[in-house]
Length: 69
Image (cartoon, rainbow, N blue to C red; front, side, top):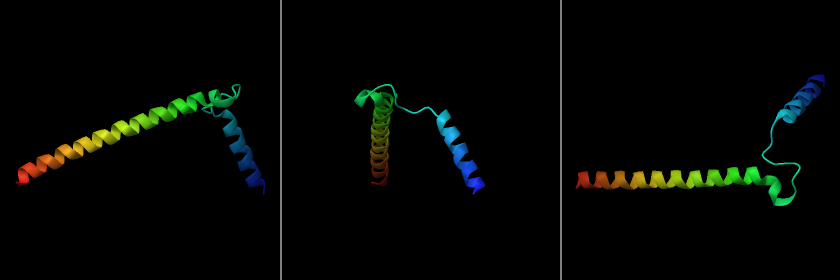
């Protein structure tokens, strides 16, 4: 039981050191500004990467079809 308590205390201390992506002083939607901004950046990156992969796939497919025929 002592090891479990020590582990939980260590986890608690580490979590207190962490920086969280929201501002506890703010209220409402403004509280999560950093979290929302980061989420938007991730979605834009996913869309751009998906478009790049789809475009590259299209070009390679057409190149292989042109060579095959």
